[in-house]
Amino acid sequence: MTGKQKEGAIRVVLVDDQTMIRQGLGYVIQMQSDMEVIGEASDGVEAVELIGALAPDVVLMDVQMPNKSGIEATREIMQQHPRTKVLILTTFDNHNYVVEGIRAGAIGYMLKDADSQEMLDLIRRAHQGEALFHTVTAAKALAEALQGQRETPDSTTTSQSVLLDELTDRELDVLQQIANGYRNDQIAQNLFISEGTVKTHVHRILQKMGVEDRTQAVAKALRHKIVK
Image (cartoon, rainbow, N blue to C red; front, top):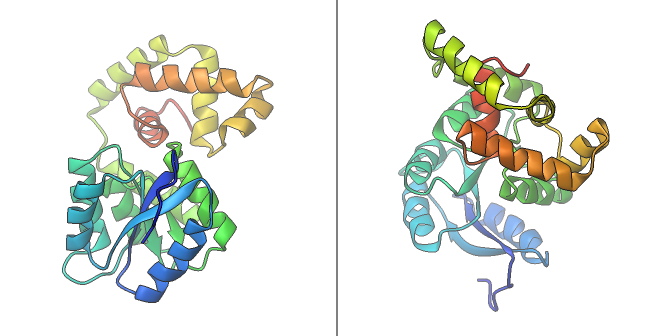
Protein backbone atom coordinates (compact mmCIF):
# COMPACT_ATOMS: atom_id res chain seq x y z
CA MET A 1 0.00 0.00 0.00
CA THR A 2 3.00 2.27 0.31
CA GLY A 3 4.03 2.67 -3.33
CA LYS A 4 7.50 4.16 -3.62
CA GLN A 5 9.45 3.66 -0.40
CA LYS A 6 10.61 6.69 1.58
CA GLU A 7 14.32 6.47 2.24
CA GLY A 8 15.18 6.57 5.95
CA ALA A 9 11.53 6.67 7.02
CA ILE A 10 10.17 5.01 10.18
CA ARG A 11 8.67 1.73 8.94
CA VAL A 12 5.29 1.08 10.57
CA VAL A 13 2.99 -1.96 10.63
CA LEU A 14 -0.67 -1.53 11.61
CA VAL A 15 -2.47 -4.35 13.41
CA ASP A 16 -6.22 -4.00 14.01
CA ASP A 17 -9.22 -6.13 13.12
CA GLN A 18 -11.19 -3.04 12.05
CA THR A 19 -10.45 -2.01 8.48
CA MET A 20 -11.58 1.57 9.05
CA ILE A 21 -9.17 1.99 11.97
CA ARG A 22 -6.26 0.76 9.84
CA GLN A 23 -7.26 2.99 6.95
CA GLY A 24 -7.56 6.06 9.16
CA LEU A 25 -4.23 5.51 10.90
CA GLY A 26 -2.56 4.59 7.64
CA TYR A 27 -3.74 7.71 5.85
CA VAL A 28 -2.32 10.02 8.51
CA ILE A 29 0.99 8.13 8.74
CA GLN A 30 1.47 8.04 4.96
CA MET A 31 1.12 11.83 4.84
CA GLN A 32 4.33 12.18 6.89
CA SER A 33 7.67 12.53 5.14
CA ASP A 34 9.51 10.62 7.87
CA MET A 35 7.32 7.51 8.18
CA GLU A 36 5.48 4.98 6.06
CA VAL A 37 3.10 2.05 6.51
CA ILE A 38 4.78 -1.06 5.14
CA GLY A 39 2.07 -3.58 6.06
CA GLU A 40 -1.22 -4.31 7.79
CA ALA A 41 -2.63 -7.27 9.71
CA SER A 42 -6.15 -7.96 10.97
CA ASP A 43 -5.31 -10.37 13.80
CA GLY A 44 -2.45 -11.48 16.01
CA VAL A 45 -1.53 -14.53 13.94
CA GLU A 46 -1.14 -12.44 10.78
CA ALA A 47 0.79 -9.85 12.78
CA VAL A 48 3.44 -12.29 14.00
CA GLU A 49 3.98 -13.64 10.49
CA LEU A 50 4.00 -10.20 8.85
CA ILE A 51 6.41 -8.64 11.32
CA GLY A 52 8.74 -11.61 10.95
CA ALA A 53 8.79 -11.01 7.20
CA LEU A 54 8.99 -7.20 7.16
CA ALA A 55 10.98 -6.32 10.33
CA PRO A 56 9.27 -2.94 10.92
CA ASP A 57 10.58 -0.26 13.26
CA VAL A 58 7.26 0.38 15.04
CA VAL A 59 4.05 -1.64 15.34
CA LEU A 60 0.68 -0.23 16.36
CA MET A 61 -0.99 -3.25 17.97
CA ASP A 62 -4.68 -3.57 18.82
CA VAL A 63 -5.50 -5.57 21.95
CA GLN A 64 -8.77 -7.36 21.25
CA MET A 65 -8.58 -9.33 18.01
CA PRO A 66 -9.67 -12.77 16.75
CA ASN A 67 -7.35 -15.82 16.63
CA LYS A 68 -4.62 -14.23 18.77
CA SER A 69 -4.84 -11.17 20.99
CA GLY A 70 -2.54 -8.20 20.63
CA ILE A 71 -0.93 -9.04 23.97
CA GLU A 72 -0.13 -12.60 22.88
CA ALA A 73 1.16 -11.36 19.53
CA THR A 74 3.34 -8.74 21.22
CA ARG A 75 4.85 -11.37 23.50
CA GLU A 76 5.79 -13.57 20.53
CA ILE A 77 7.10 -10.64 18.50
CA MET A 78 9.33 -9.40 21.31
CA GLN A 79 10.76 -12.88 21.83
CA GLN A 80 11.60 -13.21 18.15
CA HIS A 81 12.34 -9.56 17.27
CA PRO A 82 13.37 -7.73 20.46
CA ARG A 83 14.40 -4.54 18.62
CA THR A 84 10.87 -3.95 17.30
CA LYS A 85 8.97 -1.21 19.13
CA VAL A 86 5.35 -2.15 19.86
CA LEU A 87 2.74 0.43 20.83
CA ILE A 88 -0.43 -1.09 22.25
CA LEU A 89 -3.68 0.36 20.86
CA THR A 90 -6.59 0.51 23.30
CA THR A 91 -10.07 1.97 23.29
CA PHE A 92 -9.92 2.77 27.02
CA ASP A 93 -7.14 3.62 29.49
CA ASN A 94 -7.41 0.07 30.84
CA HIS A 95 -5.15 -0.92 33.73
CA ASN A 96 -5.05 -4.62 32.85
CA TYR A 97 -4.15 -3.97 29.22
CA VAL A 98 -1.27 -1.73 30.28
CA VAL A 99 0.04 -4.29 32.79
CA GLU A 100 -0.10 -7.13 30.30
CA GLY A 101 1.36 -4.95 27.56
CA ILE A 102 4.36 -4.06 29.72
CA ARG A 103 4.89 -7.70 30.66
CA ALA A 104 4.69 -8.68 26.99
CA GLY A 105 7.41 -6.15 26.14
CA ALA A 106 5.48 -3.24 24.61
CA ILE A 107 7.27 0.10 24.73
CA GLY A 108 4.06 2.05 25.33
CA TYR A 109 0.42 2.42 24.51
CA MET A 110 -1.94 4.90 22.95
CA LEU A 111 -5.69 5.42 22.97
CA LYS A 112 -7.53 5.01 19.70
CA ASP A 113 -9.19 8.39 20.13
CA ALA A 114 -5.84 10.20 20.45
CA ASP A 115 -5.49 13.09 18.01
CA SER A 116 -3.30 12.60 14.96
CA GLN A 117 -0.42 14.77 16.18
CA GLU A 118 -0.23 12.88 19.46
CA MET A 119 -0.19 9.57 17.58
CA LEU A 120 2.61 10.74 15.29
CA ASP A 121 4.61 12.04 18.25
CA LEU A 122 4.25 8.69 20.02
CA ILE A 123 5.43 6.79 16.95
CA ARG A 124 8.51 9.00 16.63
CA ARG A 125 9.32 8.75 20.32
CA ALA A 126 8.79 4.98 20.34
CA HIS A 127 11.19 4.70 17.42
CA GLN A 128 13.77 6.58 19.52
CA GLY A 129 13.29 4.07 22.33
CA GLU A 130 11.34 6.23 24.77
CA ALA A 131 9.11 4.56 27.36
CA LEU A 132 5.59 5.85 26.79
CA PHE A 133 3.71 4.90 29.96
CA HIS A 134 3.04 8.36 31.39
CA THR A 135 -0.59 8.42 32.59
CA VAL A 136 -1.60 7.70 36.18
CA THR A 137 -3.04 4.37 35.07
CA ALA A 138 0.18 3.47 33.30
CA ALA A 139 2.35 4.47 36.26
CA LYS A 140 0.39 2.18 38.59
CA ALA A 141 0.43 -0.57 35.99
CA LEU A 142 4.19 -0.30 35.51
CA ALA A 143 4.76 -0.62 39.25
CA GLU A 144 2.49 -3.67 39.39
CA ALA A 145 4.13 -5.30 36.39
CA LEU A 146 7.53 -4.92 38.01
CA GLN A 147 6.35 -6.62 41.20
CA GLY A 148 6.43 -9.99 39.49
CA GLN A 149 9.97 -9.40 38.26
CA ARG A 150 11.60 -8.39 41.55
CA GLU A 151 14.66 -10.34 42.59
CA THR A 152 15.41 -11.60 46.09
CA PRO A 153 16.43 -8.87 48.60
CA ASP A 154 20.08 -9.92 48.76
CA SER A 155 20.38 -10.12 44.99
CA THR A 156 18.62 -6.80 44.52
CA THR A 157 20.85 -5.07 47.06
CA THR A 158 23.97 -6.41 45.36
CA SER A 159 22.75 -5.39 41.88
CA GLN A 160 21.74 -1.96 43.15
CA SER A 161 25.20 -1.43 44.63
CA VAL A 162 26.88 -2.46 41.37
CA LEU A 163 24.69 -0.12 39.32
CA LEU A 164 25.25 2.80 41.67
CA ASP A 165 29.00 2.25 41.54
CA GLU A 166 29.05 2.12 37.73
CA LEU A 167 26.78 5.09 37.03
CA THR A 168 28.14 8.59 37.57
CA ASP A 169 26.12 11.20 39.47
CA ARG A 170 25.20 12.93 36.21
CA GLU A 171 24.14 9.64 34.64
CA LEU A 172 21.92 8.98 37.63
CA ASP A 173 20.40 12.45 37.15
CA VAL A 174 19.69 11.67 33.50
CA LEU A 175 18.29 8.25 34.37
CA GLN A 176 15.87 9.84 36.84
CA GLN A 177 14.76 12.28 34.16
CA ILE A 178 14.14 9.39 31.76
CA ALA A 179 12.10 7.64 34.45
CA ASN A 180 10.05 10.82 34.82
CA GLY A 181 9.15 10.56 31.13
CA TYR A 182 11.15 13.50 29.77
CA ARG A 183 12.50 13.64 26.22
CA ASN A 184 16.15 14.40 25.49
CA ASP A 185 15.48 18.08 24.77
CA GLN A 186 13.54 18.43 28.03
CA ILE A 187 16.30 16.67 29.99
CA ALA A 188 18.84 19.04 28.49
CA GLN A 189 16.77 22.02 29.58
CA ASN A 190 16.12 20.62 33.07
CA LEU A 191 19.78 19.80 33.72
CA PHE A 192 21.26 22.81 31.89
CA ILE A 193 23.30 20.69 29.48
CA SER A 194 23.25 20.26 25.70
CA GLU A 195 21.01 17.72 23.99
CA GLY A 196 24.12 16.10 22.52
CA THR A 197 25.49 15.59 26.03
CA VAL A 198 22.19 14.01 27.07
CA LYS A 199 22.41 11.56 24.16
CA THR A 200 25.93 10.63 25.22
CA HIS A 201 24.80 10.02 28.80
CA VAL A 202 21.84 7.93 27.61
CA HIS A 203 24.13 5.79 25.45
CA ARG A 204 26.49 5.18 28.37
CA ILE A 205 23.61 4.41 30.74
CA LEU A 206 22.26 1.74 28.37
CA GLN A 207 25.72 0.23 27.99
CA LYS A 208 26.44 0.13 31.73
CA MET A 209 23.01 -1.26 32.58
CA GLY A 210 23.23 -3.91 29.87
CA VAL A 211 19.92 -2.95 28.26
CA GLU A 212 18.86 -2.09 24.71
CA ASP A 213 16.53 0.86 25.18
CA ARG A 214 15.14 3.43 27.61
CA THR A 215 12.14 1.31 28.57
CA GLN A 216 14.38 -1.52 29.77
CA ALA A 217 16.62 0.97 31.58
CA VAL A 218 13.68 2.46 33.49
CA ALA A 219 12.27 -0.98 34.35
CA LYS A 220 15.65 -2.15 35.67
CA ALA A 221 16.23 1.07 37.59
CA LEU A 222 12.80 0.84 39.24
CA ARG A 223 13.34 -2.82 40.03
CA HIS A 224 16.60 -2.01 41.81
CA LYS A 225 15.18 1.14 43.40
CA ILE A 226 17.78 3.52 41.98
CA VAL A 227 15.13 5.90 40.65
CA LYS A 228 11.83 7.05 42.12
